[in-house]
Image (cartoon, rainbow, N blue to C red; front, side, top):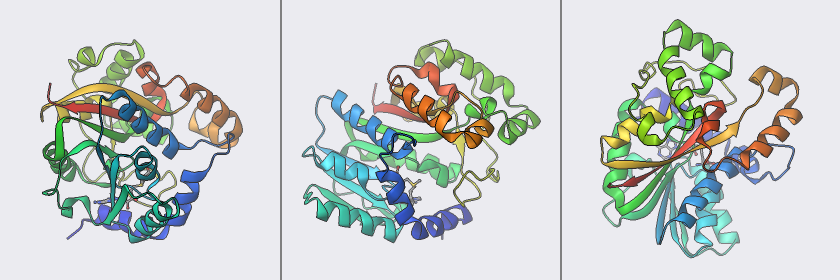
Length: 297
Ligand SMILES: C[S@@+](CC[C@H](N)C(=O)[O-])C[C@H]1O[C@@H](n2cnc3c(N)ncnc32)[C@H](O)[C@@H]1O
């Protein structure tokens, strides 16, 4: 039986598949395409690896990443529990005659992992829709499903950004006395400290399991945020080694200004995104981030 958060997510993505596909497609330079930013990072990770024969994309949405990866002659599987998303993904792969792209409609917690191991597993914009218990289970599943030296690339809403958004998210962190830990992690990242140095810090406590997040465009009540250190700690416990923290959707102005003058924000943000690789000092100012970890030391 799914929980309320997963029920809400399923209902939302079932009914918004076409909107999502349009969002993924946009190449208007005046807009920010977060889906492309995230997918581009996974492609970069694949380029950096010696060899990649297979990829699993969890919560694949309309299948854009799976199709891009399949074009590189890599067997790519996308899993999503929203049938409408999967149908659009299948249509795209068929339209582009991509034999290496396959899709399955099911919850990742029901997927049959017994058939193969994967060189790369990606989960972009997915973990915010599962509970913290499910996240622990998910990380165990990923660890078992990865081949030796496999890469796991996971995207997350960035809890550190709550300090720099200077809005209701900041008030919430102040009220719950989390600012100290979040600020220390932000300073460490902004000072260019290594992942090893950052890992010595004490992470902020996880958000309460029943947190109700201020809505930012998606009609799901609880969409968890994490800091890079929180995820690194959970993954370190499972014998993963953190390699890179990559900023997504960099802000140089507070969201209230962004909403008034989106074209100003979008053009600065897109300009800064070109510097994202190897610049984790931009992470505290980013509303999301990606973490690349590898299996084994
Ligand atoms: C925000 S969308 C991201 C889609 C795509 N990864 C992207 O970046 O464009 C999150 C996706 O996760 C899917 N999802 C959420 N929970 C899931 C679960 N338990 N199993 C499989 N898919 C899930 C949703 O249906 C939705 O398509």
